[in-house]
Amino acid sequence: MSFRPFLAAAVLILPLTAMAESPNIVPGQWQFTSTTSVKGDVPIPDQTESHQECIVQGDLDDADFQFLEVEEGCELLEHNVSEDGVDYQMVCHAEGGEANIDGRMDFLGEHVEGNVNIDTESPMGKMRLETTIEGERIGDC
Image (cartoon, rainbow, N blue to C red):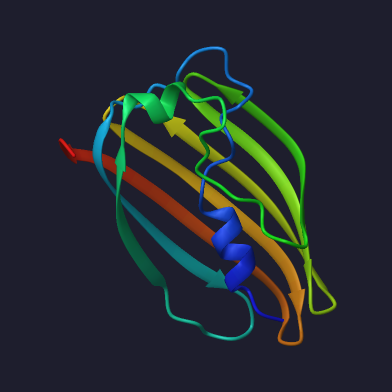
């Protein structure tokens, strides 16, 4: 079972469409870094990924703006969105396996931080992927 779709779905933030106010995120050029640790019987080294993204106020005000596309095979079970952050749970099914995902992201103006935990059963046994996410505004777009 491939974990890449689960990880891609999980390390990003949920749609912000339920928000009455814009998220507490300052528009500009952002650097996002996520580090994933795998807990289980098979030793797998930590993986760190980074990317940059330009976020403008129009994006934040747009009811359709989102940081996450729910991947095929995934179902959003619960999400609570506020100006200051988002909590969510989802389940994903792929190649005969299931992954349960719990995430939290805090919006802190020019900084965001959060974590995502993925519990899954794989041919290698039970595994837990723990991802920490940090983002910071690094300047204007």
